[in-house]
Length: 402
Ligand code: EZ4
Ligand code: CO
Image (cartoon, rainbow, N blue to C red; front, side):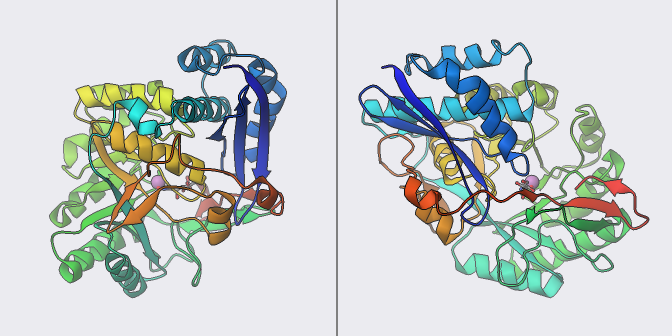
């Protein structure tokens, strides 16, 4: 089963996506997502210029070997660009293998461990009342778990808030937009928001919140403690986690569950977090953490330490990743929850897919492989547009984590 063709498709149906398409001798093709938000063309070049020439003629069934061939064979290990490129190849090979056996991918991953996949949606608003309104809207749509982000009084713009009627989309064309930050304003406001959410919406709905790497460990510990009465499902990225031991300090102070890892790209980024049980959920997902092959290794390490999965699923991950993540989620034993932000209608048309949402749960569908296709003619009508994620400055102008 030799790979005979490989191509990188870059398109912008509302936002930029990079997709790898691999074709084997008998015409079967597989897809892999290679989207790295704000740095898309670096991965496209990595694939086109350095990886594709190595793939033509390789046996598509040798998925594990190909992973190590690209990882160890590059000599330069890890990093988001390299690992996103490897992820795309790996995902496409799993797609091909499952299609060649005429089974949905989850059947090759040990089969279903559950009937359906719990997902969480994103409620947001520019102030407390609008956020409560948005939260009620998501409950009406059937969500059982909802992340809440709100504009903070005293700050002009902050992370996670949609503009007007449009769903939240942080990347902006041409130059990065600027957010404003004050830890003091934020720490004062967030516990008030979650007190209101619990009072208005009762004890059952799962509440989630993303601090987006903005706090120091001791500030994060304080927030975790202040949120304890409202029983969050998780507090995400309470601090930047390059420094894994920093999580010890947070852990010593609060029982609020912690989720980290959407920016991680290998098992070595979370090894200490998992082995010392410093987190409760690992956020890494297929597209940035080495594909299905490597993500399973992360999940299996996590299983031994009672850490559950909570894959990243923002809209900058293409439907190809969403499909792959749902096969992974359905099969992996220590699944926790899956993030879900519906894509734009244009994106869904470019990537027809078998996965579906019902009553707060999703399923990858029973189509062979990932169950996600690409309409290349339609994709060509949405050419790439350079865009950047925002940057974030404190009120005195100092650059801060976004
Ligand atoms: O900011 O995917 O939990 N979700 C997130 C996302 C990230 C974007 C960055 O590209 O933190 O919204
Ligand atoms: Co996040």
